[in-house]
Image (tube, rainbow, N blue to C red; front, side, top):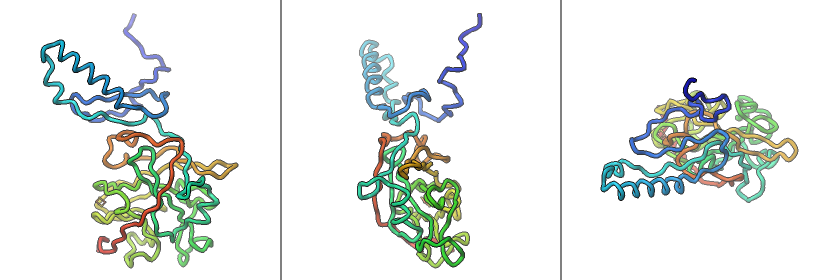
Length: 273
Ligand code: FES
């Protein structure tokens, strides 16, 4: 008889847990794909540390060096939650509400954390402010990749820069006419004032200018067809900057998450000449 063969139903398939570089002694939980919901790693790791401490006590310092290698516990979730978006006023965020209150000309930032509490994202509606279809003389966009709503113009992207991780409001959405420069020939974009990276929200937040080379991760938006309520339900690559994975590094948001409004830092001086 051969050794143990993991059956096809075995949830611990290596390919579903890409290898990450962890320091020696760092505790990591490999979660089952079937294990949805938040994981309280702190409680788990406190128990593990207690067990280590007990071993040291029993072993007379035999593994005393191990403690110095232990690092703060990693906190995260094992899968993306489906979270209902709540508007800044506390009401459900619906397509109708977004299309009446948000458009490509809105200069305030509307941010929501997802899927972790320290992972802010932009909520944008790229449709023109006057409600007319976009054209060269009427800035805006429709039917963009991943866009939802009547015009496929409602999108959400990570608000953490892919260069060195500057978060909003240092990275912000620039409505048409904000700056005289037009990176990549675009008249509206997401721009980071830290070092000048620029992203195209009408094309999966692809890079228009560096030094960042990766796009901003795009949050998957879903619309309930009967109510029009908008949900976040997943996030595309790359990994949110500064995190081991987009699901690791803080506690997850709940079944709903509220938008907040913030004034952006807009600086035309940081655009590449
Ligand atoms: S952190 Fe955004 S450009 Fe450097």
